[in-house]
Image: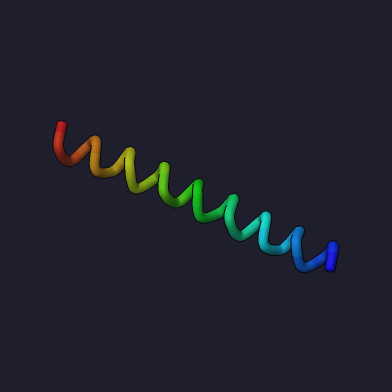
Length: 31
């Protein structure tokens, strides 16, 4: 269970990194 939660944590970390990357990209495009 601990390993699975760690994997989920890393996946969510990657998702938030991707979200911030998309936010920066859209900021560059629109501003």
